[in-house]
Image (cartoon, rainbow, N blue to C red; front, side, top):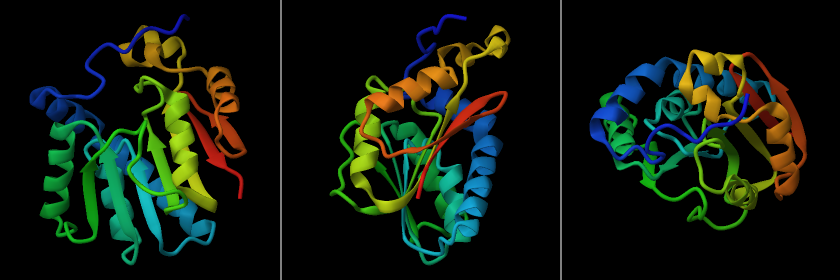
Amino acid sequence: MKREPFSHDRVFQDNDYAGRYARRHWKMAEKFGHQYAQKLVSQGFDQGKIIDVGCGFGATNLVLAERFVESEIVGIDLSEPLLELARGAAAEVNLGGRIRFEKADVHQIPYPDDTFDVVLNINMVHLVDNPIQMLNEIERILIPGGFLYIADLRRSFLGLFEAEIRSGLTKAEAREMFDQSEIRPGDFSSGLLWWRFEAKR
């Protein structure tokens, strides 16, 4: 199956669409948060600086903020409607003081080198204009020995039923893209809907 262009605005500037997208994907984003929180704990992480590069409506970040109460958690995205949803959700559960959501371009992440202990990047590779530049920026802001988790849609026959899947990469295509970037070594895995990358430590 040939990869197709993404089917709607990549930055989600429409408030109604952003709201529908958030409602449809909220549980999925929370699930990622629980999975990565469990993985971080099992690998010895207790507290530090965490960034979600392309945080969307912030549900993953809220789970991490509740689990790692001594950590600084940041989410960045270009979509103001999604960021407003994230800020509102954080305020509702009284996490506004321990988590922040900022408008920023994943191609030019506004933080110094070696700033974050943990970087997450979920459901973004197929969306951005220049994923290799994004990967290089992720590598730049992550400390040596830091935790890095990336996941994105895997293009497969399921694209016959869900248009967004047709815009994803296969695991082989993702691996080739990562090889062209400056990202540190890591391991790939894949399931029915997703391919995943985890940096070696």
